[in-house]
Length: 312
Image (cartoon, rainbow, N blue to C red):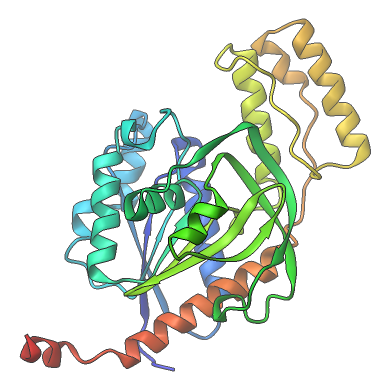
């Protein structure tokens, strides 16, 4: 294994409320996955992602502009999703920048992890595969089973429980028709992990192995607050298999109260969410550790930069 540090880029697209948490989650995940390997993480942000003044200030202080990515020398890249707002991806304000990012990855042949909405954007840009909207938000913990072996999931076992939190899906039949290989899935969620190798390895992650144990609960509380403020029409569904029977009963009691008296002031009575463990952490560290191993092997197999210049 090379003693030189691996350089990984992280394009953070999450909305303001999840921006810092997502950055920390991926830092922690990569740190656990790296083992004795030295890792350098560079943060990038797309300016067109809508943000508050405070969010823009944080991005300016902690992230490089996406323009700095184009000449960057990276060993690998991770691109996060964001909360979908438009009916179609191409109507999102950041779509031109996201499309350019996907084209850049394809042209550079850089190994990339596409997370959640970023996975939907990438398969649409690469192969015209349209996402499809669920009837209601998919949120909860789901048992996903391995569909086929692959070096990325070596040592991960035959399945795992993983958080999913999304409004859209990509059809498994369309993925298979365009040469994507589904590594893990569940009937309730469709494809969990899938890959495509076209010059470089693309890993698509519809679940959220980077999440903390309480992230789904915090997202649920956020959506309840939006309902009480009149920012969403329907009361959110409870995340699947996240809470104890006692906690579920308390949350359903609060739901009945909120539906009867829709008032943002009720949030002061929202049941306190318990601390929660994240049993998927071991699988997450192994998956990303395997990914980092692949980056290291790819770097050592690549010709030196001087030789590449001579070849040109």
